[in-house]
Image (cartoon, rainbow, N blue to C red):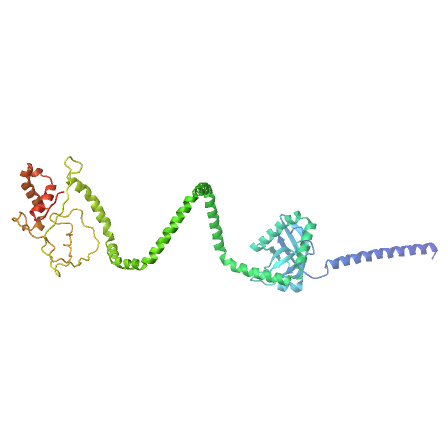
Length: 438
């Protein structure tokens, strides 16, 4: 073989070795990357559909179930307004993952990357299979958590990182070595909150009532300020009249001292007086319902009495009448009254029926126990229209006609024009009573 051909063959061999070296290097890197990306690791492929993933989710993020890593995120792609994540689950751990799981995208720390947290429901289905589609957890707790995380991001963007780092370092230094105390404090706080929870409706009602009260005070504030202004005038007057106020207090003090001395000396007498007066007060209390009727009838009788005595006319009469009826001599042990009437308080008619006085109610005469309740008969001849007894014809129309006939000649008037009060004055004389005019 000539030297030129030998050199050419050597050059070709070196070139082939160089290409082979490059192929080996490329294959090495390819296999290394494939191994890093777990291309040769068996897995169960499932799909996660979510409305968004956030800017902290990446390919290769962990997939966890109750804190245990069961796979990773292989790819992330957009699908319209939603996002689709291809998950690679460990085949050895799919037995603990039910087919009806939901997923949450949670951050590992406040500033850390997100991972997929599979939520196992209360009624788990059979284990998940390849090709299954997992939906996002849309429970109220998950939504609130997403809102909190979404609201935290603008806050973190507005906070200066160096100041936040200093604050977190200070908090970490303050809590270092105090984990147990902090845990006990949190437990006690939880107990307090648990005891406070039943009272929350009452607290809410109290706060509402306080707001209503504050609103009332707010509306009443102008009047209250006016009252304070008026009170200023009153206090100024008291200051100006302080000497008189002091004298008044001194007088009240002396009067209080005198009253105290009087009570100390007469306390037994007051007690005995109370015991003595009690029966009378009991009777007055018993007949208290009758007093309004009695006072009303007395007030209503005033106009009739004034009319009878000619008030407002030229012939006004001033008469004092004392009528007494003889009931015979007093007989001790016989005429002593007995209070047998127990009918209690009642209101009788204003105008008694003809021939009957008001003390004779519809139920019959008052039984007062007297042995001689009726006045004696008139000594004169029997009057027409009755049995001759004065009590049966007293103040009756027949008696009034008789009195008018007897007094008409003396007055020079016809019997029909004799005043009605004439019978009131003259009739007792015919009955044996005494009438005194003053």
